[in-house]
Image (cartoon, rainbow, N blue to C red; front, side):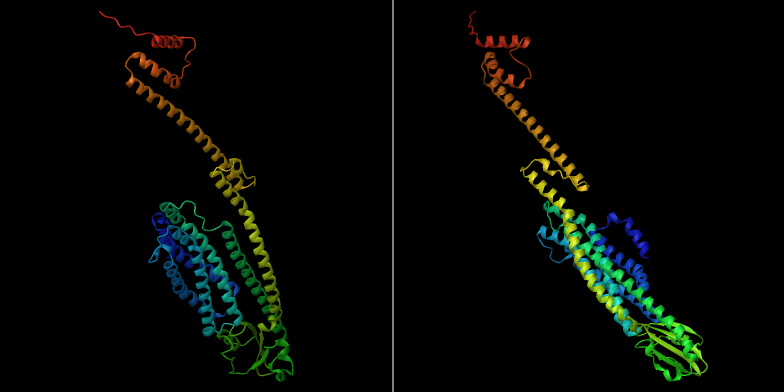
Length: 468
């Protein structure tokens, strides 16, 4: 259903409003992420039994619509243009729209972390999830919420770009700087770095748990047959320190079964079936349960190894990993700050040079930045554009000046003609102006010289008054 809805919305994407696109992005991202990649990642990094798996499926089934729906409603309530009282200041509305993706990312982080915490408590109460698995469950929420928050931050910024452009155009805001490129690079890179470190740590923890599980399986496979054949095994029942602090050696006679509070139903059924078996149990504590027939003892010999007893080195490794992770995070933040500033230094230099050239303070040559990358190419294009614009402006100014002089001369000629009383007066008034606007070298040889001489002579000749 979600696939068909996504296809229909994609076909009509150009007719959708910005708010509708945002709602589709909210729900589509949640439905896809928490019903496909998140459960797969959860199963790859968790140790759960059949009952816990059912409650996990139930948690994903109800939390995505309920918690996800609450997130969508909260995000829509915070949409800048949906507030009951929209600010009359266009610059403030522009900044609110600009910062809205960050608000949604933070909101998603909080809702996701809350949802995973609720799911962990639910599994603890109804499915006896071990404490360490609860901590891993909450860590999953941290990792996934950071990754999804980065996605929403970038996707929403792209969706809201036409809305910001429309607000700036209608309000005449011009170039309004509400954020920096370095800040965006630093925030996104830091979130991805933290989530990547947590993701790798969870996989490393799962690998360590697998190693401990294999070691406990090997121990029970080796020791249980020997204990079933040993004559003094009956005196060693109960706590078994050789397998760790929580290790136990139990004897189940006909009709006996394991306590249902401590062991999963699947484990109890397998032990009651008899024979030799090794079972991984995650009820209350992660443990390995082994069973072997013991005819000499009159029943089945059951060995229990609690895996958390072998997590002592893991705690030391976790502390070292935390210290190393903190140091790496500090170094990463420093490197990200340096890299973001270095990568945006050319942009800031180009922006400063453009403002100075626009103010007429320096030559367009300062726009050229020899960085050898896209910024350098952009600066070269801007420099050529500025030079061509200045040349065009100078040419237009010269043409306008020439046209203005021509119009002034024609206007003077027109006034001279209107004020003249004879042809000689017209010649005397118009001739100097005609010399300015007509592209001809007056006073040289040829017809022009004859015309000039004739006109000037006629202008100097005395008037003849004759009577009939």
